[in-house]
Image 1 (cartoon, rainbow, N blue to C red):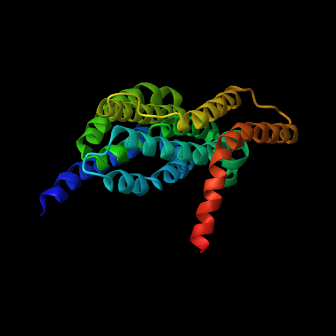
Image 2 (image 1 turned 180 degrees about the horizontal axis):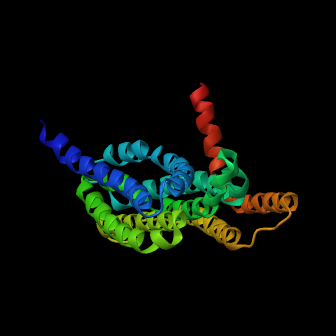
Length: 275
C-alpha cells in the first residue's frame, strides 16, 4: 500500500467510524431509556437533519480537490479564500432549507403520521444546530486536503465524549428533544475544534471578508429560527400557517441579499457549461 494512500486513508477511516458512532449513539440510548415509539419519532426528525447534512457533504470533494490540487505548500491566503467561498455557498444553500423545516415543522411531521408531531421540537433543534455548524463544517475537508486528517479524528473523539455526557443527562428527561440537542451540541463542539485547528494552521483568522455577508445574513436567519422555535403555537391552524408563511418569506430576504453577488458567477458558469 503506498505511504501516501495509507497516510490519508487510515485517519479518514477512523473518522468515518467515529462519525457513525456519533450518529447512532443517540438512537441506541434513546431506545434504552424511552422505547421504540420515541425512537421512531427521533429517527424521522433526524431525516430532516440528514437532508441538511447532505447539502454540506456535497461540497466536500470540491474543497478537498481545490485545496489539495494547489501547490505542495498552499499559501494561507489561498486556503482562506477557498474556505471562505465554499463556506458562504454552504450557508446560503443550507439556511433556506433549514428555515423551511423550522417554520413548517408542525405541518411536515404529521405527514408521516399523527404521532410523529411529537418530533417538531427535535426537528427545530437539529435544524438550528445544522445551520450554525455549517459555518465551519468545511474545516474538516480542508484539514484532510492539507494532510492533517488525524485532527478530524481527535475532534470527533471530543465531540463523542461531549455528546455521550449530554445524552445521559438530557435524554431521560427530554426524550427525542434531548437526544436532538445532545447530537447538535456534539456537532458544534466538533466543528469548533476543527475551525480552531484551521485557524492555528493559517496563523490567523480562517475566514476573509467574502464570507462576512453570508454569515451576517444567516445570523439574522438563526435569530428568526430561534424565535419561531421558542414561540407559542397559535391554536387556529389556518392563521398559524398563514403567519408562518409570512415569516418564512421575510426571513428569506437577507439570504437573497447575501446571495446576490454570487448570481452573476452562477450565470457565467452556466453559460460556460452550455458552450
